[in-house]
Length: 476
Image (cartoon, rainbow, N blue to C red; front, side, top):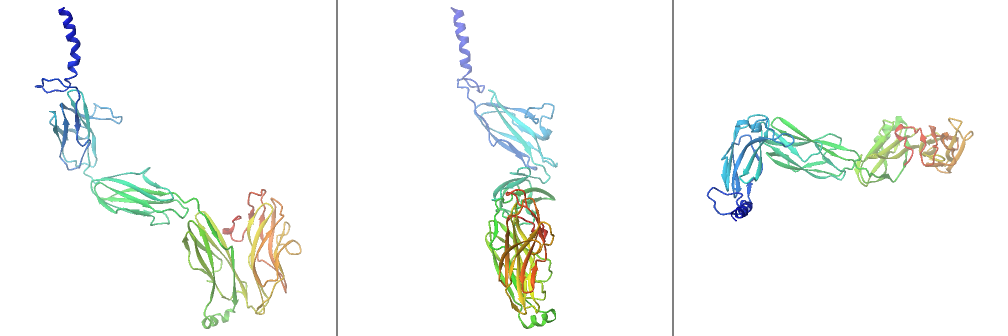
């Protein structure tokens, strides 16, 4: 019977232990083994000059400080290093033991070095086995800065723009400025230009409208150092661009050069202008291309954004009996539209049929489009012409109406802008093309011959040797 009672008493021992997991020496009553051990504030970071911090301990049981440990890159304890990490004997903790709520006092000396101290942590453990870990770091005395919120050292924005936030950790005063690395500027706004210590900055970019990737650098300056953050923004990819005209023909009155200064002094210089409408969803620029250095053509603006317009003006007086040509190129991102400008002359004392440069507008497998301008003036009065159009040949490099194939665009005008579509061409074939106009003195040709090569497929454009290399676009 005594043996049976002993067995029953031994079986009850684990139940009693479950109610006495954490108790002081003078506790006599049993309670459930549920412990509380909390370090208020979590991980601790010291400034370079701070020497002491008070850390509240919230506990309902006895606890003690496990000696300082150092963690390796994998987070494991490395016993081969100093027990206090980068701090060595410059870091101490008291008290090493407590019961219930208390205050942990961490002492540290001034960090006069240029490196941040770290790699140390404190382990608090209850007598019942509950553990809490506190990581300890200290900023360096050297002015320092770290910037969070970047990716690959920078901020990346879509073409739509927007806001992004940078978080700054610093132990000194700092300023920030923007250095633009491209042709465009003023597309970045910062929420602040200076600060001191820890802070944050909101970086805002506008929508990209040029069709070009753009980049800038944020320069954070502190003490005599600089930290860089690259700001990148992708290009607008859905750019549209069109003009309401393909060409403009101006007429200018001929004045002999020896009379030009006199006439200009007594007759106010006059410019004729036309308006060109631009339809676009992006930024655009206007560029005038001409081989003539004389100021006979001008535009009233060189750039714009979205739908807009610009004016093209031509001097109404000239000393050149042959007239002039120019091309205006409007560019938006990777899109370009061309405006062909011709100046024809009237008022010359001899038969003055002016025929301007021939341009190819498009070339495909079995057809091509061309344009040129002309004006006819005889003895000071305009006279109507006969037929006008283009003539082409696969054999003759300077085709004429006698040896080539003639395509008539019209007749009976004193001036005009001629647009001709040549059909029924052979694929993959080279052609020589000239413009022609009949007048009372015979036929006059464009001053140039355009060479084209048709493509082998209706889906692919052919080739052309437009007189200006910058105009060698085949499809609009």
